[in-house]
Length: 170
Image 1: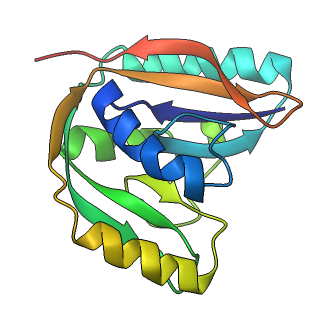
Image 2: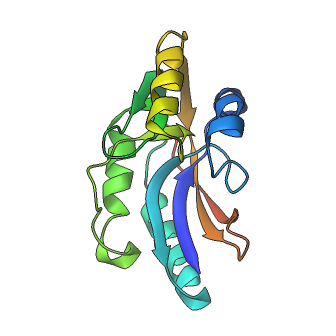
């Protein structure tokens, strides 16, 4: 089975994202809008329990983090993906770094770019059209994230919460 670690934004941000994801994200039905903290890693059921225990240790002193979402971005030309750009304080980056050690599946494959995917699995022409439209849209979200979630993937490809971990508020 695969697991991943994410933070879910507020309902307001999820509703905005889903307005686009419904039409342009091939993973829309598999997982709600989220900020990935640790991408998918293969494990078994015993491994998932061990990850949950380690995650408890990491999060017991981890701080809640503030995010702002000022605009959209794209991973073009590497991937035809459009996303909400997430600006965050150091607490998010510290947490991401703590989750990319051997105990959680090893180092990150790419430099961390916090984001919420709006569109993926689209053509280059679709990307240009949607991205052009979204760049003209007023986007301004700001909120505090005070919990993260350990998810696992079901046989049908969808993701479900295994356990939720609260972060420390100031």
